[in-house]
Length: 374
Image (cartoon, rainbow, N blue to C red; front, side, top):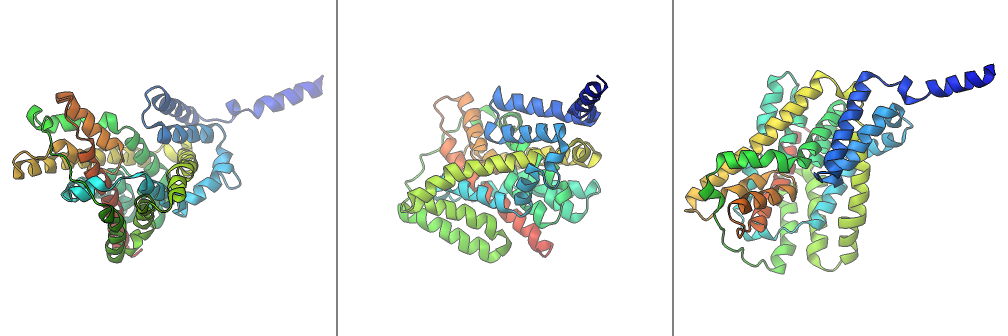
């Protein structure tokens, strides 16, 4: 009987209930909230669901993220910048750069939304982070998870990679909640109802030359961006060349979703209570929110300027799509515009600044790497 009781006691004490801290329970609750948002509200479930489940796992069983644990090996692929680069390959294969090519002014709108990155950099410095850490944190302002992970790894800020990645992906997922109030506050009803002219047809030659030219120009000026920009443009060349449908399909479907699973769960698994519940993380999350809001606002404000300069031909709402959350931000521009006029179709116009934002965020990361000699 004694042996039975000892065995039962050992089993009970090996359960998670006897080993978890208050912090672990807090993070489990946060994970459940994120799961609810992903499943019930469908806030970018492809991102939020694996991240929140990784968060759940690591706070129930912390060794899963330690050396020898399953998610530890997934995370090594993040640190080596492999998964972020593969994500860009898939994004390129899925993305139509036609709206950007048809309306090159979208580059300016995409660039204007990157002001949030530099606002976050200054804010992080003021809050006591060193220059490299501030640079890594600042990319959250572009709402670009893969680039945030990539830059944090390159700048040797691996201890901050978890909070940075979670903040970036969380804000990407919450674009439909964060952006609309800012967009409405900065625009008038008349501006939101502006209908834009139909985009010109982009030739096949233009579509094929675009990824080649962008790769040559951007990677020649900022060689450190080659893993991100190069993979983005390679994926797009798969799409536009029309001669490698198998590669396009693999990059945009099977490979993309495998990488999302690995990256999402490993990012979520960096949020153990010990690593996440501290003042540095809280400051990063707040900085990320402020930077993302600032990037959205700067895009809309520049859109208003362009609206004035073109005598009302550009709807300022598409400026908010200049953040790097593709295609969520473009969909939000469409939704807010349609609230004023259901016949107003802004989606394709907003895709121009949206995909320009992807390139712009990678360029911003390249600038930081050049500054720090990476």
